[in-house]
Length: 508
Ligand SMILES: Nc1ncnc2c1ncn2[C@@H]1O[C@H](COP(=O)(O)OP(=O)(O)O)[C@@H](O)[C@H]1O
Ligand SMILES: [Mg+2]
Image (cartoon, rainbow, N blue to C red; front, side, top):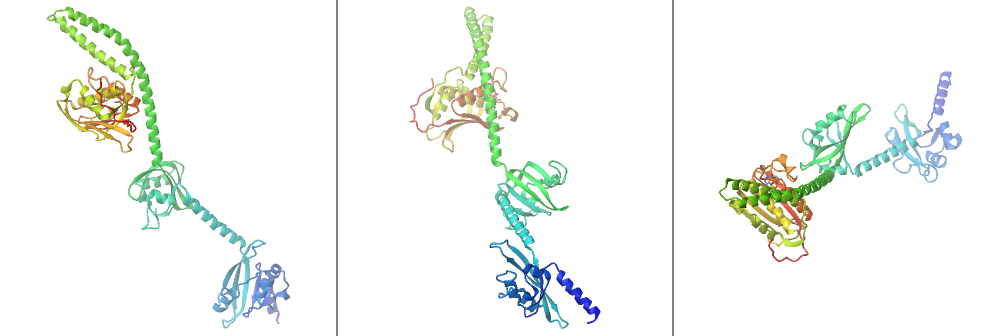
């Protein structure tokens, strides 16, 4: 052997031994012809024990692989021999008592000049760490997926083109769509026109919540049937390194919350209103009492004087004016007292329809009905309600007079009674074809002393008194609709189902 050749052989042997992976060289008949130090070290065997043995025996005896994949067709050595190309197999060892180990066994053929396989190199890489990481990663991915899917908030993600890539089940429910059905869905189609663009420019701007993220804000989305749904949402841009890869949005349906908020606001307003009414009531009652006495005096002395004067005396007429005005004052005082309800309330059962027809007869000036068509739409079934009949009758009179005033004595007055759909309330609707209540007045009509009528004609106490009376009788008086075509007020009272139909009785 010349020096050059020896040197080369020496160099090759060194490389083989210093390979950091355990490595074997096999003959095509699967007999080991060489094993490097790393292999012997890991196997805990001597070179003599390994070399000359079949690889199956070596792996079973020294490598503690109880079932090397020789018999099955997966044996990569067999595949390598067949195809004359490299093959590999991933093996897991141990596990039952010792820690589980994963190794990647890679087989590479060494060909001779004719292209026939002379030897096969088998090198073994420990991939336990990689494998463990990979499994952890897929586990995490699965967990993340489950977290996203089971979130009560709707979550969607879209690619840079805005096509939706992910939709959790809450999102499918909110938007009424499923991603894998039908063509790609673009974010523009899940918002009302213009909203998606606004959100995207807010995301890319430096506005609220900082760049790339939006603080929760309220907006509307569009579901599959074109319905606008109020939501609270946050959005973010997702980056991979510096590159924008996706956007995501998280939505909470606000429909229920908004209903609750509105109810709360209404309740607050009602409390405020009743507090205001209560204090005004006290004031009104005090004033009314104070005025009542001197007023009685004025009327008494004026009528005494009038009686003493001959009827052709011009002062007779003057005194008549005084008496007329004083009477009007007395009416106002009566209204104030009714408003503050200084009169005791009584409770009895009666039929709503009867109350309505009796109340209409109470309107003194029947001439006011001359050019008014009255339409009766009374319920066929008897609706028994319980309350202060006289007071409730006053309410109906107030509402009807307001309706007549609004129609300037010509038009149609409709009186409708019915049981509400839930069956718990007896309803009375009083509709007119008058000019309606202007939107800016609607908030004030139940305020005491609010009137749009000229001085002397309106006191502004009718509706506020009526509102108070109906509430005290366990019901509710509301303005149902008002437009230039007319106005409808509705009185709802709890209906009595356990009570027998009472005997008709007129209002005294
Ligand atoms: N049916 C109606 N149509 C139009 N406006 C109405 C009607 N009912 C009430 N209003 C408005 O509400 C105001 C308050 O009514 P109310 O409390 O009865 O006081 P008044 O009748 O003394 O003015 C009225 O002045 C009027 O502007
Ligand atoms: Mg009135």
